[in-house]
Length: 298
Image 1 (cartoon, helix red, strand yellow):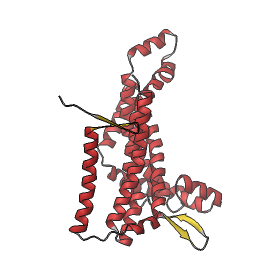
Image 2 (cartoon, one colour; image 1 turned 60 degrees about the vertical axis):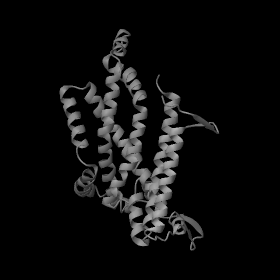
Image 3 (cartoon, one colour; image 1 turned 180 degrees about the horizontal axis):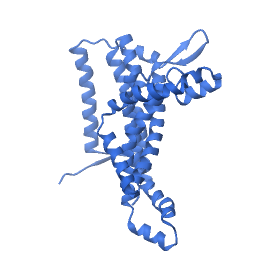
Image 4 (cartoon, rainbow, N blue to C red; image 1 turned 135 degrees about the vertical axis):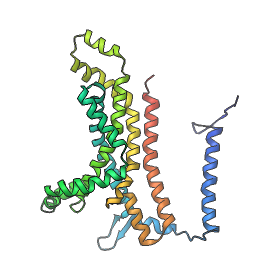
């Protein structure tokens, strides 16, 4: 029997295993930087990195965001819109897969199996060349935005992207939304199936129709059960958003590659990009874990 000793530090409990993991991580990071200095004789220039977050505009006398902050914000926008699209499509597909007719179940299964067995990178490229060039260009969204008022352009730029990137941005969020929706579909379908049959029988005994039973009884319980797996899918969406850099969406990874090519600060840039992704995903996962402990179904 292995004994686990707990150490309480400022109301946080760390086990021996937790402390060992922390020590291993610190040692690995220290070894990495040590090898960089001794083997490659790499000249670290961390002092240059803060300038790519914010810079002082001498002409206007204001502090402005630079490419890393703009890329970080674009990554957040991509993740939010892709999650909303994925949640919408995944919920519909999950309901069809769990309670639909044979045709609906077939459509849901085809969607899920097709999307999940296509690499996300391939899906993004297909949508970029098919959706953006064949459909979005016909709508002339970029031209409409250029001819719109400054207020409309500001709102559109804040929520989506500017006129030059609007078509590419929309094709990217559709592709990501479709990809994430396939996984959301299975989460929702599993949640519906997990609801005990007695819930249906009890609702019918109260005089509720099949439709009202599903909408008022089954679906709310389903979303309560799958809320935390869905939140975990949001974290996955944030990480998957990096693939849209291949179609020149100026998100965090794309800005990192541009910055590396311009400055040759290879390790400084990628360590910074890694930390930014980690901060974003770890913050969400910590919030999800806290809510899960507080509202977990027992």
